[in-house]
View 1 (tube, rainbow, N blue to C red):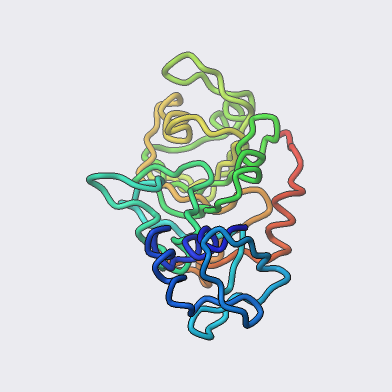
View 2: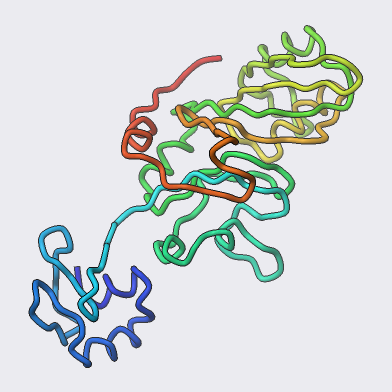
Length: 242
């Protein structure tokens, strides 16, 4: 990798700014100064330093966020805050993006990465990666709804959803539920309940594949890096049928 790209990727400025930094001679590889921005280095085999401080370089970053309501699942927006605005600069410099999306008013588990291959794998319709949501429903959720969701319901545009698993946590005029789906149509959970005459008033994603949100660990708006085992578990995720 070119030294100018590496330094730009980890937050030392634009390519132009990095070029000026290199001219000062403070950038070194294994103790030898580098001034040519085209110089190729291997951060896995060489020690790269700037002002004698070791540069930690990672090709990919994998983050688990407890998304708050009010933020867009996007990398940028001219008028509204996005989940990227919640990241520390040391993580934002890797230019991660949301894996899929949560609606602006939906909270909970959101994965962010710059690993396009893994993101594609997790979002592929062929993989059927399960996503579980906790929701508060205006209207009493019944066993009939459980059966309907298991069979697949017809949305307002005529699309019939794949089977979903619906679990009633608390019944009543304001029910609480868990619902697990394996696809990600626009506003899908909200539209599924609308199809059976009910309304979602609160929605939070609590798991995606093998990754489960622990709210004792991550408060709303907080995030952490996934462990190597968690990343590997995501890579090994297999299709499921509900």
